[in-house]
Amino acid sequence: MQNLTDLPGNATNSQKSLSVIIKVCVVIPFFCIFLYCIVVMLHTFASHRHFLDNSRYILFAYMLINDTLQLLSSVLLFLFVMGNVKFAIVYCAPLLFFSTSTFQNTPLILAAMSLERYVAIFYPLQRPAAWRADRIWIIILSLWLVSCILPIVDFSLGEPQPGMNVLSTPVLCKTVVLNASPVQTLFKVSLNGLFFAVVAAIIMFTYMRILLETRKMRQDRASVGKAMHTVLLHGFQLLLCMIAFTHPVTESHISMQAGWLQEHISFFNYFCFILLPRFLSPLIYGLRDESLKGYMRRAVLCCSHRHRISPRALATKPRVK
Image 1 (cartoon, rainbow, N blue to C red):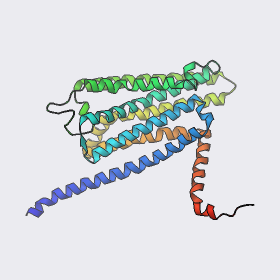
Image 2 (image 1 turned 90 degrees about the vertical axis):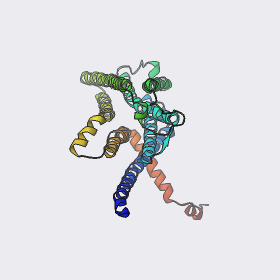
Image 3 (image 1 turned 120 degrees about the vertical axis):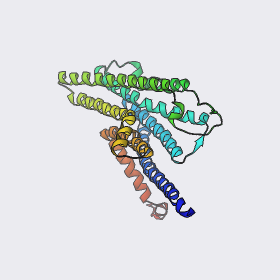
Image 4 (image 1 turned 30 degrees about the horizontal axis):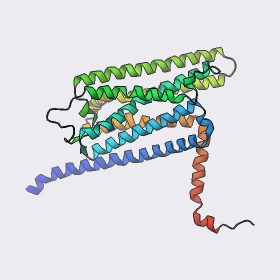
């Protein structure tokens, strides 16, 4: 009888273990492919000087680095939750702060890239100093400081639960640990709404101005039209970022319609609305650029050619006298 009563518990534990293994096996290869593509792009930027002399490519490289850091922190948090790893809030808070700030930084970078296209079209000869390639670090630093405002204020409003020691009590490193009060929830929703509304207004403004300019100009309409499509792509990227904030609605809808477990719904939201948009966003923009795509193809072919030629084959290759 004891063995029969133990069977359901063992079956449940085995199902949970299998579910965790499947989720990890889905996320880790996906992240490795993303990391490989990003490394190839950044290597292309570092190997060709003319990319570093263009503000647009510098902002794009900064977006690649920011999205890589954001995915790295989110994957670490995902692995901690999947492995049921617990540690004190004092160690969890920096990781959550880093993940939140890099997440907020992505739409700011999209707005900055749209404004850069606007400045390049309307002020080609009298570009403001901050938008030049040698001064673009001012814009990047400003974006990083603004993206840190939300987590700083959010975490400062939070209070640990009664009986919880920040230095010693082990907890699962989730956002709900530091965002438990209604005041924090209201602040976060309000600021996120204002945050994305401003970014969406900037992208819409630049798109409409460039669209009107395209109709007026008779010369060089191809470059202006390309800039218009680039800004439109930034709007699509912003939409992908905003989908991540719909997880409460999607979780309730999926739970009612499909009857999934809460942990499966959370993984579905994480993969589809956080991981996948961050993966597609830089790849769509990078592979769309013909110049960057050509250099990336050469870099990949060069690396594969080097791997085909073994050191032993090079040593036995006859020398030409």
